[in-house]
Figure 1 (cartoon, helix red, strand yellow):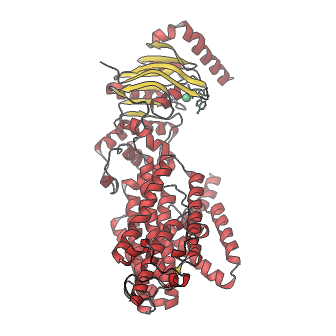
Figure 2 (cartoon, protein in one colour):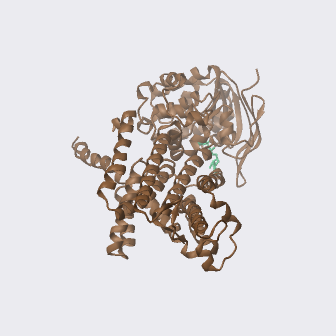
Figure 3 (cartoon, rainbow over the protein chains, first blue to last red):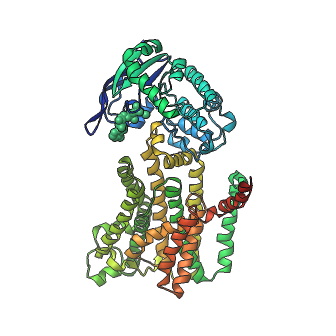
Length: 251
Length: 355
Ligand SMILES: Nc1ncnc2c1ncn2[C@@H]1O[C@H](COP(=O)(O)OP(=O)(O)O)[C@@H](O)[C@H]1O
Ligand SMILES: [Mg+2]
């Protein structure tokens, strides 16, 4: 089977500084693919490039179609969904409204100009799936941090994205919420390609099918969790830094 | 609150408004006051559009005078043509042109002898202009203060442009209209009819705005206001969403301008430039930009205060206006319409503090 998304030699430069320097990445349906790497490795920038926010050289192909140069909303329409490092939902709208908007990019002007009679079935189903069914009429702005992140994932699901790029989806979550999120990711990856940008090593070990390690804008290593963990360069560069970070955080 | 969101509640609300506008006001107000109210209703129509574009869509439309002015001048041209035709036959030159020494009717004036053409232009020209401008601006992601400055500059430039046009009356603008589609404007009955037209248009405009707010589009517009980038990543062209609200606001302003002309009897660059544009916005800010009725109430209140105060202290009004603006922005950013919510918060505070 060919990859759902295939990135070749992606390069993003900010005033000459290469935040991403020639990255190859393949995402397959049915897999949760972790993108790890220390702060500033270029993970978010890579996601920005794929989704059309950052200019890049190289190529991104989804299902045989080149995406480079397309506008952000066109790329989204091709089924590529992303979340943001800080959860971005429509705070003044309810959970149901958030999801209904996310489900509606293909709606005709006529449908848009009328009032919503009832929620589409897949919106109701998704609300159940992300555990926010009883919050349907709650303004998204007053949701807990973790719930916002789930809502954001739900918004990609109702929008029929089949390549999901999630930027730090468990940041700020407690242990139980992480567990739930991990299971949700596995569940939705059944028929989609899911890429997860994450720092947390335990979370990665528990839920990654495949891992790509970025360092200073380049791919340092790629493979299964074990292959990557055993790689001495990864241990030196990333795990070492992660340990330092952890030490610094507890200090 | 819930009641007014139901279908029955909506109809009740509109019925009550119609009762006040069509029943009470003409009964209680003298012809002169009714004429003033008619003028204020025109401002209120502009305000409903600003409430949509700014309150719901986040576009700080500081230049609605442009669209108001377009509608007003287009209507004024027709009225001047009709008057000239009535006096001197088809193709006659309007009186102000004779005085300015213009003997040939400028070519662009000729089609405005047709009422149908004029009305079509009033509806289409400003809307089309807003769509083109909106596409140019929003596709380039011009927003916030930049958009506000741009639209304000446009209003200023438009007024200056008009001052230079002798064939549009220059600095003095167009005035002294005798007939409105064949009806004598000196007749009090016809003046009252103009008031009814303005009131009717206000209700229609409110109904359109309400439908837009409650539709899926209305939710999408709020989403664009609050997180434009996010909307793009969901597959929408956010610029198009904004253009619709901006164009609707322009259309409302244009229609308001067109009705304003026969009611007030004059349109000049002074009524459409930067200061009037700020006035339009001021009412909306004071009334509460994000609500449906806030802009209407604010526009009426500001126009009324201006008339009342400037009758007594002509120079004080400008300062009062500035002060009012600052006070509202500082103390009541949601406008008068948010008073209920704010008092509720104040009443709840002690409880929270005690807890
Ligand atoms: N808009 C920008 N302008 C300049 N430099 C940027 C910009 N965005 C990111 N960078 C830089 O690019 C590098 C990669 O950043 P980022 O992709 O956010 O890292 P990560 O998500 O892996 O922590 C960092 O050194 C960052 O400072
Ligand atoms: Mg990042």
